[in-house]
Length: 250
Picture 1 (tube, rainbow, N blue to C red):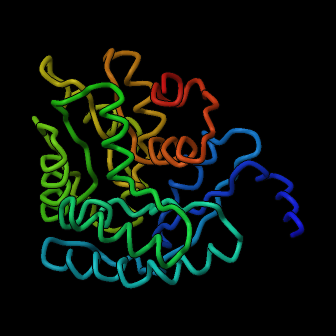
Picture 2: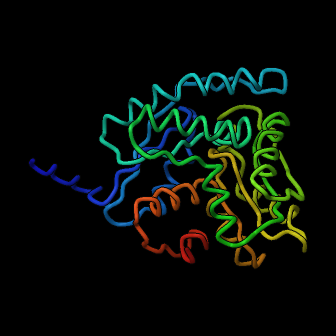
């Protein structure tokens, strides 16, 4: 049998990332942590930038869920070796059973290992033996309920959670870093072991890396930790400095 020639830039690992079409943050944040021989490739779920409210929030979630397999099929044509499901809400929806079911279905459909942001966040927290956490999200209250429920079921104590209630998908990416910084500072408390930022279109990666220096504790950003989990699952152990302790320490 003839070996397949390696990809010119992704010889070690090509990682697919499925995101909503409105998402502008996952791609630059994952590219910022990639190492030589690893490349990230985006598949987009077509959704509109319509206003999100408490009343239509479940419709928004349903639209994302409906397009996941289409986006997966799109990015799989690149011959990726694994897949990050870069829709945070879907990764937390339905508790542990719901996320396990989603991962199993996506893995069977794609034929490659699948990384969920929820699992990556939990793995990052466990790497630091963190139990009591404070969480920042861009979501409406119904979404925050799912995030809190999943993390609690996974064994973490959510001491505080702040949802920014962003009014549309693109509005999430428009939250300035200064606002994220202020919210992380407000969430922190002596009893908090680690901070968590979810919402893949919220530009929290650089702020969380910075926050770790002045708070003196882990601040887990979902895009960073998802990329970390995908690389470590593939046996790629390169360390990256300046983009979060998880990539430096583990």
